[in-house]
Image (tube, rainbow, N blue to C red):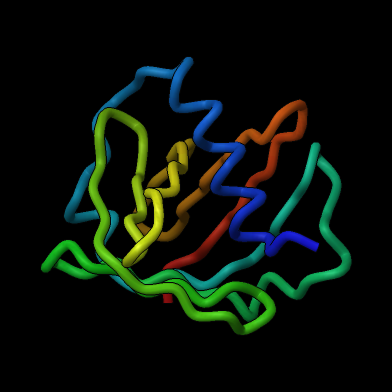
Length: 124
């Protein structure tokens, strides 16, 4: 079974080739975000507890991500228009479309094949 991170990341790669949008507010993006929901094609993923997920975006352009299963990912990040790119050491970058970013909420989507995944986080 692919990890949730891989599924979501691949899905966002597909979206990144077809979407243009507003720029991401770097200052607003920085901080620690706690998962609140993960969906696949609009259905909650009952096999994972989204509250175990954490995403930390730092001012030095590095990030840490802990997926709902507790697996850690670290690296650097970049943004372009409404896309967030996570660059893991020794691997290809993963692309996420930022569909909503406020002081309290971060929503990311990714498309893989015919599936669309979404992750919602709240600021810790």
